[in-house]
Image (cartoon, rainbow, N blue to C red):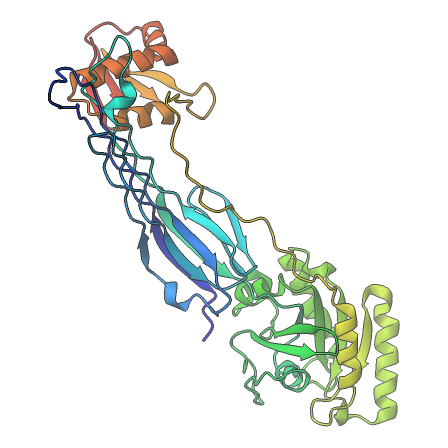
Length: 429
């Protein structure tokens, strides 16, 4: 069975903490700080692997990358956490935890699902001419985490579409070396099947998309799953049974076309060949009349109309040539994918620039209590040990530089009032 969906939980590794350390050497009474930085956490990375066929091995699994090591004395930097690589088949799409759209189509392409946390700076980073022996360091931040849905859309040049029992599987078996299941009952094909048409100078990948029914675009049957695979095709081969057991051939054709248009995503604009299947049930003269009537009815909206028979092989050579001729040389165009994971160490002087309008805001919650909103401010508090008096002093300096203290005073703050940031609550003097 083809598994074309998977929901996984991903978590980037946490960054290592910076070290609080001082040089201790003989005859060096004031060695100074030498705490090293913590290592960055590893990320969860997707890798496009052509040896993979579906997403079955990934369903309902948790993936956690390695955390960064803590910094050490003697300015030793903690080791970076290893990335966790998830191998997926070409044609996989996802949206990363950070919101980046991922579409991997070429072997070797990578994209980051969840980035690792940043390593904290050691106390060496905070030494200045007036703060020569800082006894505080930064904590590492946690990595991105969350549930991600992976979707596989098969990479095919042309797709066979039509109602159930239209003869798509039989046609795929005759045009390619694929061996799809063929039977005389509806929904024989429960998952897309790929085959390759071999010509003298190129190959064309042909996909048998399971039969569409009325209401497929709204999810009837497995419509959403089937139509998703059609989106990858550069052209369509619409298979219509000339002598259906129920319904009129033209009405059946229009039913499938309506579902393609209702789906959107440009499916209705794809180049289309119409293959009138099971032509062996008609006389040659009647078949020619049918082809003429279809061409007159559809006009220039299609590439052509051909009568074929999988049982006798009639018309298959012409259909093969038409498919190869109609598929563009560059049928599948890879879309933009999130780039590879590149993590550089932070600069010597760290500047926090919170995102969003204004960066932060101050809200008075209770009498004598104020809450500071803003991602940058929250990250700043996560970085430091609030039980460390020197760290608190540094925090107050940073808040002053960012303008937060001035905003608190404008809101009515007085020394000794309670300050709340995220889950932190403390009195500020």
